[in-house]
Amino acid sequence: MDISLQLWSINSETQKDFAGSIRRVGEIGFKGVEFAGYGGLSASEQAQLLKESGLYSVGSHSGLSIFEEGFEAELEYSKAIGSKYIVCPGAKVDTMEDINYLADVLNKASKRAAKEGIKVGYHNHDHEFVKVDGKYAMDLIAELTDDDVILELDVFWLAYAGIDPVEYIKIWGKRVELIHIKQIDDKKANVDAGDGILDFKKIKEAAQYAKFFVLEHEEYDKPVWDAIKNDFDYLNSI
Image (cartoon, rainbow, N blue to C red):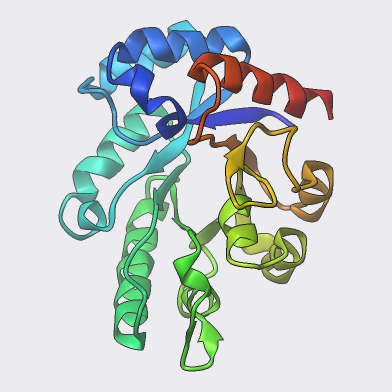
């Protein structure tokens, strides 16, 4: 699999030196990045930095407020840097009112983004696996959004919620175009890719429609860059 990196994984580094961090991601061997903020760079500056670093943009994590109020600007920026997806990284989904509102926002954004060749999606944490009116909130989000609204399934948070990632990926099939590769151990901690309980080979096989596999790592027991390089090497070894 071609491995991309969710840049929140190296947030401590990008805050100190955004451009230098992006270049280092490319030097490690990653093929793409998923943004969580743009480091204050203009779209043209960002596009040039990606080109210099040998990277492409999978897309961005863009908060619900951006979908509500700043979507045109986000869409313009995304198009300029070659992003393929704009993903809502999470939202309040405690009630059917919350879920219906979110689905409406995503559907409208998806129709608009499609005109620019970009897809809209939703990324889960664990709170989407609390039941609302007898169903998991995540299932309701998927049911109430158009087929063009893709799912970015985070396997760490699926496992954290007690859901089998392999089986859940199979349920939604073609809707699952992005996978967050993030390892969990039996104490529900985020650990190095090779040190936890998730079988990424089985996850890859289940995610037969996935276009991109995006590494995310948030908890560290070693220097950030050492952990990221270990993850990259392990994932490429399998």
